[in-house]
Length: 79
Image 1 (cartoon, rainbow, N blue to C red):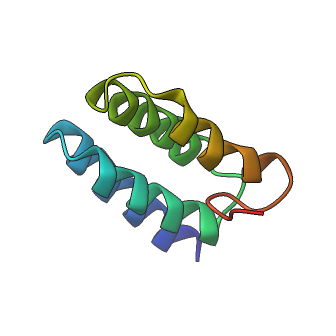
Image 2 (cartoon, rainbow, N blue to C red):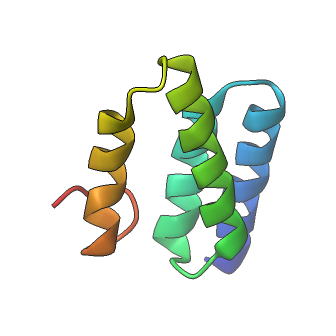
């Protein structure tokens, strides 16, 4: 499970470098589902959220909705 989390996080890094932030976020979500304490995956996912927000014109409502559930549940899980 630990290695699979690293593989997903590495795939996320590739997507980020190519500017595919939605795919990078998905890979980070998978990594965090396998290892919820994986700080690098969490930080990379935050970067993806920020870049996606910039691309959408700065609409904070979607970012707030996505992160709201994380304070109460598992990463990426809406409550």
